Image 1 (cartoon, rainbow, N blue to C red):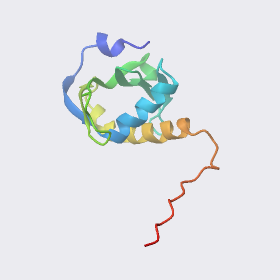
Image 2 (tube, rainbow, N blue to C red; image 1 turned 120 degrees about the vertical axis):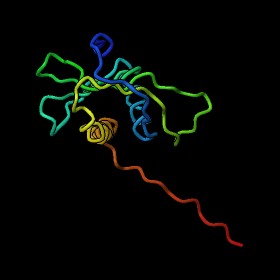
Image 3 (tube, one colour; image 1 turned 180 degrees about the vertical axis):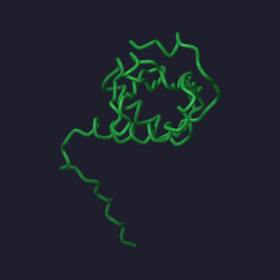
Image 4 (cartoon, one colour; image 1 turned 180 degrees about the horizontal axis):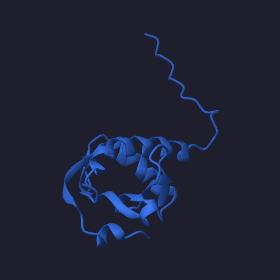
Length: 133
């Protein structure tokens, strides 16, 4: 289990929000792989994303998995609706980490969407027949 984001001093820390679609797809992935997963980020040469239950950490593989940025301390309310954003803490371990945050979240969604597909596209949604009046 990765813990370097807890051991390395952060450049800055602050409150942030994760939009519901990002958080929800990660939770679906963690149901299938509860020990977490590691995603290579295409287009971001030496960066990977380590997704754990309590943190999502961008790491630099070329620097022995040194953290670049990390989302942690997700505040989950029991009555939270699925469309509501999640409050968390965002830690920056590199001065320019803020430049890639949005791109990493978009790549994460695409990669997890591919990971969660079962490969069977034979299903479809069928509308209920209209009631005749």
